[in-house]
Image (cartoon, rainbow, N blue to C red; front, side, top):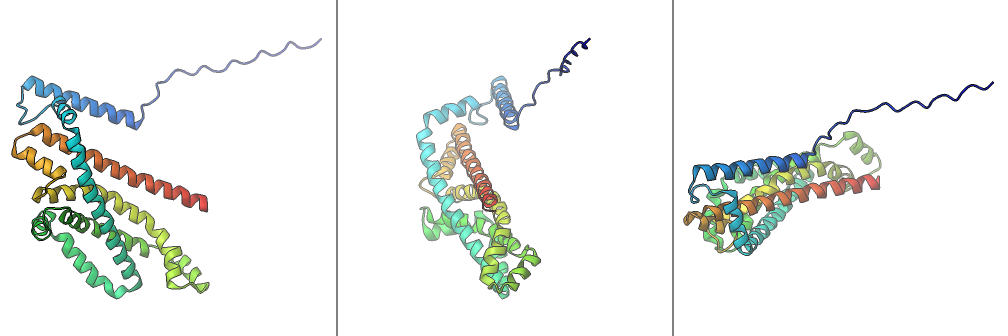
Length: 268
């Protein structure tokens, strides 16, 4: 007589658990709570708009003057990006020169530290007098602010190389240029991107500070006009646009770093 078929075991029931919200959801909720609390406090305390405007007043100003703010943001973005590219090129070039000719290190770093130690707010008026109210002084100020971190990080990356790799390349009769390209340059890329993450938002700030000293357009000009007229919604709106642009540039650097890292893995 055959045995009865064994009963199929039931799957153990798993209690329902709420999925933890993602970081973006938490960030959006926190921002929403802050804005709601801000608006509520301004309404209950009846704070004058020329002191602390509510988020609703800032949104209304953005909706009414978005074209002006967008044009000003484009001017500041162009100045910041030009200065960032120039400062990065100068800092990277000096790091390469020091790597090949170590005797230049003391002189170059001394001059770089001197420039770094000078406050931007002290340089901007001088450059405005020399170069005028156009984009040139803003580009120079941005380049002066951004080149030093790139120089220091790139130089550290060029030197932080596994000596075993260098000796192996030398055993293959590799030239100093080939050693730099195949060993030092790949090792310096993380250092370079670390510097870019720092200086990219600073480039926007440097351009705005230079525009405060004298400009015919740009976010700094809009901020100065709003400040002079006690137009706090306009001032907050310009700061909001500046924040969005700076954050977008930072995210762009992050994505570029991730893309280059994946391409490098694919090549390997």
